[in-house]
Image (cartoon, rainbow, N blue to C red; front, side, top):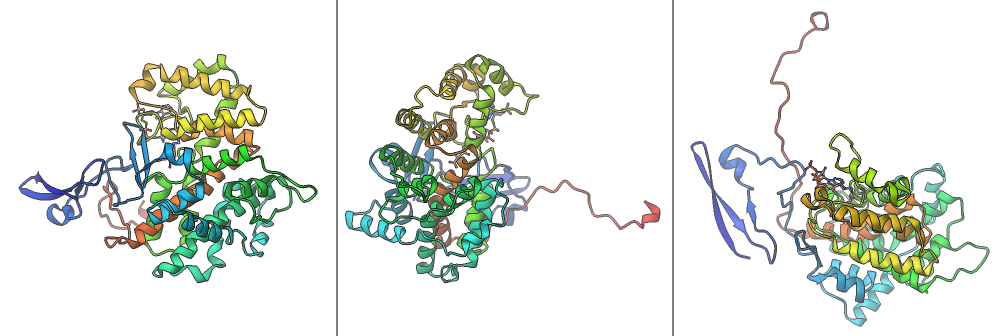
Length: 429
Ligand code: SDX
């Protein structure tokens, strides 16, 4: 890692700041000593120019539309790998050998059941509760069950908690879905792979055998890969901040799920499909494009735009390809919402407003159409995002805990409130 310095002059003070270079990507200016030397803070709401940590896990080049996991391009991982292989890569930093993969798959498979008492939690929720509300509550409650993997100072316990989270999220997500639709829970089956097991837990019923369509299982697995990790996005930063206080991993993941729920973040896949439904037909697209451009209208094209990607989100291209495969395999090739989505993308990408603001489809734009064709209701879309992102959250959480520079995250502020003033008795107000 190379280092140079930047000199900052403020009033009568001058301070030398260290500039550090990473492997690839923008350099960073280390401002850790800024306040001590100048008595001033930096100010960056939304963290548009702020690196919160050093990481080796994921690299994004927003201008080029590049996404690498431990150096491997997302296109190659989605094409050639499977989700548990990507989980291993994110957690351990290298692609597994055949023996390592076999052992990892076995370990994950044998953690997929949840404590039987977990099923009692669900009966407390209304059936029409949003499944993300169920996920936040139920995943947070895992802390109450797995005391033997909450000591974050013990690397073995951290890895056990990591495997438990990756293994149990599909089971809990499927339970949230089954509870939501009033069907009995389906237990995991160890003879199915990760994605097929999830689809079986969601769509099998006790009354008859359910054979998982291998094309759909492969598509589900690839969708999980596309959502696995994404640098320091809002929910990952939430997990890191929660973890910096020493909170247990289950509580940190529950915090990440809560943050992901927002429509500006992981909730956009649900919002994007609802938007396509609202538009309904191709002839109504111009009306919505105009609304998206209208400063006085809060409406935004959901599934479009990104804080980092100022080019096409590479995941969106792979998701579009997966969409075609799933629509074909499920007999929905003529899905009218797909026509609306394709036409909306075409019109938006040729519109000056979107070109000037560099707004392209993101990972959420085509995922809704695909997930609906797989059989999931809209309200389950963000749950699937959370299921897949759990490995990214847990890998980043482990990296944060192991970082020697790690300390509790505690930002400061620009205070613009009232200056000091004395209390006034109510009779004199
Ligand atoms: C995810 O960070 C990650 O990595 C997230 C994620 C991951 O994998 O973890 O990639 C997953 O969250 C993808 C994003 C999903 N969200 C949506 O699709 C919601 C719609 N998109 C927008 O809300 C917005 O684009 C954000 C939230 C994604 C990004 O917001 P920014 O970076 O704060 O950008 P901005 O809001 O400042 O917008 C810049 C300009 C604004 O116009 P001006 O004020 O400069 O005139 O672009 C406009 C915005 O009004 N704009 C849009 C728009 N997105 C931005 N206008 C219309 N439609 C949109 N979708």
